[in-house]
Image 1 (tube, rainbow, N blue to C red):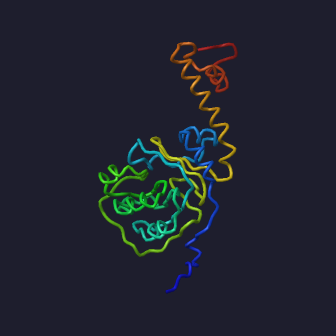
Image 2: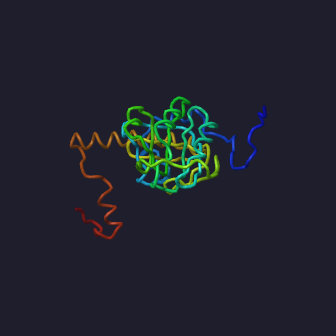
Image 3: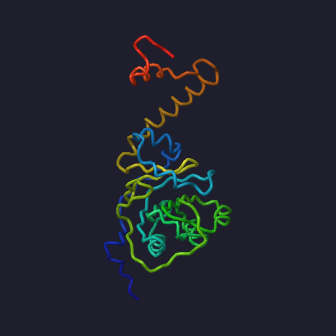
Length: 233
């Protein structure tokens, strides 16, 4: 029996993942918080939405590039991924057929993967909702894929208009998905915590009636040329 590991450069096995401790800390924050402190970048296009808005995911990106309508490389990725990995699939936004369904997603759950993000379509929606596994996609289609066209595993991809590298942090919630570059995750945790504190204080100001209008509004309007010096709304 030949047990040699595949050597094709299109089947990359090893890469550096965002550390589990950082994943655990980052998972406490909403995708919106992380996107804001990352400079309002890294969010996938809004067409990639959660199948269920109550699910969340956080983990290192395991990237997969496929040809539209073919899921051969997703099957290979599932055989190589580690528990906690999030499959991030560049499906070229194709919605002509599904590239994952109940059988594959059930397998992902059994393998302990962290979730699936597909710039493409899924199927078996009712089964997937019952399964409760985090799935993000551009929509559904009952048509099935082929399983014959090569692609690439764990190379840089584009998913939802965002560059994703293997090992980057992927966080998803009811709003959508944000991808944070692996090397910047640690530096964003303190700003994210501060932003949560600031936003809670702002909401308290509003609900208590202490300050409903934003304190920055007049100065922003002056900077935009809509108010003169000394003027207010």
